[in-house]
Length: 74
Image 1 (tube, one colour):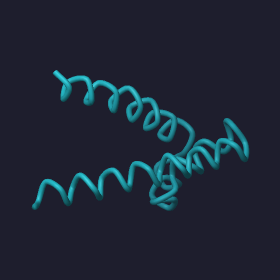
Image 2 (image 1 turned 180 degrees about the horizontal axis):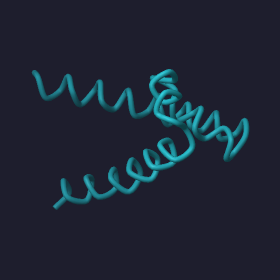
Image 3 (image 1 turned 45 degrees about the vertical axis):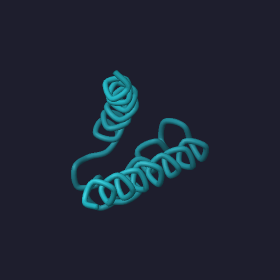
Image 4 (image 1 turned 90 degrees about the horizontal axis):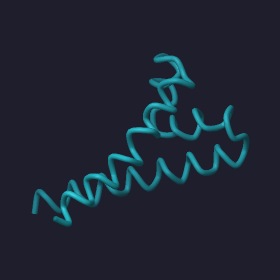
């Protein structure tokens, strides 16, 4: 049950964030931004605060992927 809840929570966060990034930036801009694409995508919508929140979300998602990716391999 807890796995399903976790997947639901993560999906409700990641899917809208991805949609915002795809709708605010063109594909060349997304590929050029790479690591901070969410921060750059949030900046036109929310200004400097959006850039900061996008950067923090990017860092959190990268850290999450690194931690869980390493945990699965061991």
